[in-house]
Image (cartoon, rainbow, N blue to C red; front, side, top):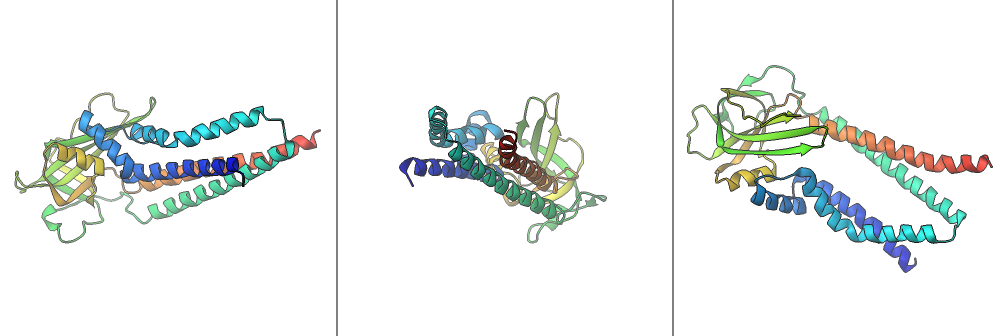
Length: 280
């Protein structure tokens, strides 16, 4: 292998590793993603999920992108080599088809995993938070009576120009809980395409699924920066009816979309050159 081919291979590998690392960091809110997010929280009080991952990703990927761009320009200026171009095209097609098949498998796995968690049907059962602590939270939908504590609140907005989403995390004091006790319960509310500021819930009951230590790491960091004392373990009440399955369905949809797209592009790369030669 020549030095140029070695650098080209290493550039593609580094780019793939950066993508995987940032995807892991974004999902788990860990590593570089978490560190950049804490800088945003320290300065503006919240973080932007897309920018938190994209900006560091571009910086990490810049050496590979620069070398790959230089190689692309060199190949455009080099004398044409039909045999080498066909060989490269065929290799790229097989790589795309392989990646597409892997994405489809991930999508199927996410869909199957979604069936093992509650789907959100049925009425919520009244639940006393004093019952949790030394045992796992219930796996059914619960109702908890109490009041929100706006002294510990954090929100994060994400989306695009055409679709936006704001998720608010508010501390919740169950009835009978001491006002100066460490915060044990937080409520998650999601609003899409909002037209104004998100208003925290002000009623007397909340219903949803309790998740032990369910606060996202950067939200936990933001609330602790407000001076709030958070119990260990704490519990997140996810209020969306399909909140337990939604992340899996998102993974299934993305896997199906990218899988079909990559396999389709790979198939076109294999078929179109042959049709072009046949028409000559």
